[in-house]
Image 1 (cartoon, rainbow, N blue to C red):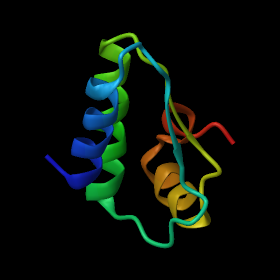
Image 2 (tube, rainbow, N blue to C red):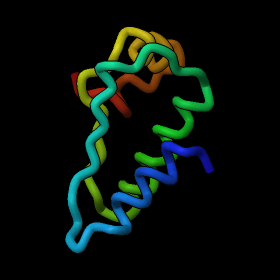
Image 3 (cartoon, rainbow, N blue to C red):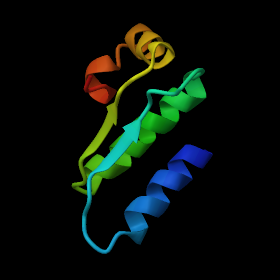
Image 4 (cartoon, one colour):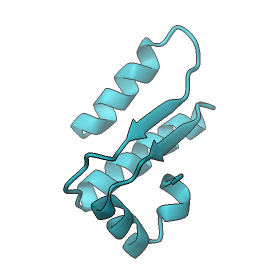
Length: 78
């Protein structure tokens, strides 16, 4: 489990109510396949639990790798 996945789960599990999870990726300067997989796993865990999950303000590196992998529609909202 990656640091990102642990952080998302900690926020979600610590919430007293079901809250949406949003990740602002504007300042992201590097992401590889491991980071992309962490986002996918966090999204899947949230979705399975009925929690909204979104990545907003995607940086160019995130847009690039998500596009290459065909995941832009799954992860990115703008």
